[in-house]
Image (cartoon, rainbow over all chains, first blue to last red):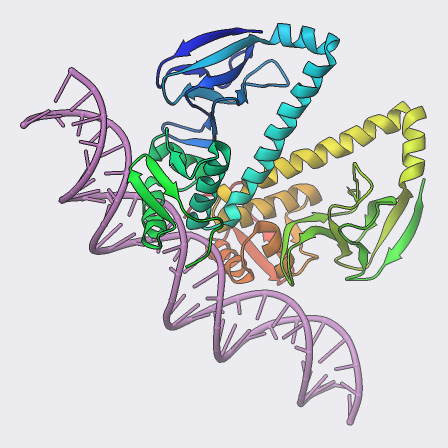
Length: 189
Length: 189
DNA sequence: CGCGTCTTTGAGTCAAGTCAAGACTGGTGG
DNA sequence: CCACCAGTCTTGACTTGACTCAAAGACGCG
């Protein structure tokens, strides 16, 4: 269902406020969704990796903007056909519920980040990535600015947090965008 | 519907996790609801004034603890009777929806406070109180600690914020618990 | 290579938190 | 009626974590 489509890096998939005609599934590459708040300012930035859905909306408009972080292929599924199937196919209806409730849970977890220090946020982010990719070696497809926005810190603070984790050998930096995660839970200094 | 009941100051109305048998409406006095997080630590602290409902739960358990801030009278309404009425009386069903959606809206607004400075949070809180009471002279029924927890700051920071507002004659302090709000929106120094 | 972008590092600032002390308040008993 | 006391609130001095500004270092692509 739906059709695969190529997206180049930084390509805008949809903008906040635009009519939500399709839902999307990442097949390869990586996507960011966020709420634009002024020039160069973004909040609620989230990442979507292969297998993830994005662009799910209850009403007719996108509440987030979405852009490709790397070149990738996304499955574009017209909302109409989803709605049509959901009424007849119970399995699809259930998986829709599943997808949205998981998104909701993620959003609620995300609220909590304000109660944690920069180091904790970064550590949590890395652990999350490791869990999602199921490998100790984590590939950061996205630039530091995206991660910083996701965690609600500045790129400098992010960089310093990474250095601190590195000094404590909690991580090793293969390259700037490749990190080995050598810890299982964050321990304050 | 339901029966009025007296509550003394600091009386626990219900604790988080307890079965939710009733819903409540404040008739006089003031209530705080919150999530207990460790000894002397609370989050998501909210206030409920005369006319407000509290203790509304979707499932059978209270997700918040509730205590009377001052002596007061609350209407105690058994959930069963509400549920029974709601299925037959459309007006009640609608007002239930109204009440819960307003609670939800308040909760979503509340999320945003982390993006504001202490002074902004305090100013916003005072404006909110003035709006709710419809008078410039605001009576703070609750101790500073409650307000601080509500705004996610410390009592010292709260106190300093109030002095700063006072120095700028945005407010005048009739007494420690009585404040005149003389401004319409917060202006950074 | 060389340029532009991305990332790290350094130095300084600032808002809010902590710790500690003093001031105010309201209630109680002498 | 006043003095005292406990709880509440304010103030001061200090610490700290994150942000800003500025500059240097690394990387990738032509």
